[in-house]
Image (tube, rainbow over all chains, first blue to last red):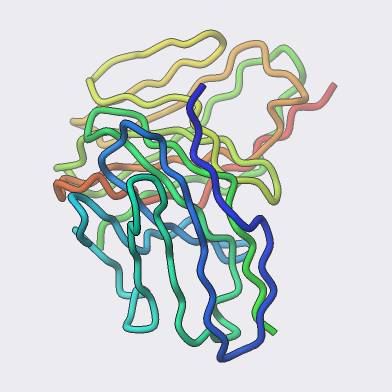
Length: 113
Length: 112
């Protein structure tokens, strides 16, 4: 069964450093997303990506964040200068469209020290 | 503010019982509705999704949608201890790009 994959599973970084989180969405899906979940809190939308451009972003997704689809399979989230409050689980998700399932990857636990 | 509301629980049921989980949403334009199961430290795992009024059944799970009343529910029949997890309700807003808005989740505890 197709699945969303993410690497790394855990990333530890120092405040101010850049991190890149990687995702491989399901191959025939058209919409890609990043969500995050701070420990003990709900899952929050960060950004959606369709047709090789950002289609929607939340208030959380400021200038420190960027996304890219560098090739036909990978989808990345970059945080340029990490802050302590960026520590969270980051989930990638993908779907074919409105009336289709949206599947989540296993997540990357980002710890900023 | 588009919101999704769930009772945080915990909801405790004995093994073999029916667990009933509820969710309300504020945006009448919402188009599709998802139930995810999340074990501690893991990612959301899709259980059911529904977009038409009425019931949708898949094995031990039944999702119910009432758009007029703006609620969606999940019934789990013959609950098992392995069903103990947090159940997340998520709503696909009518924005055109399918982003999901999540509730805080209901913690379900199934006792043997």
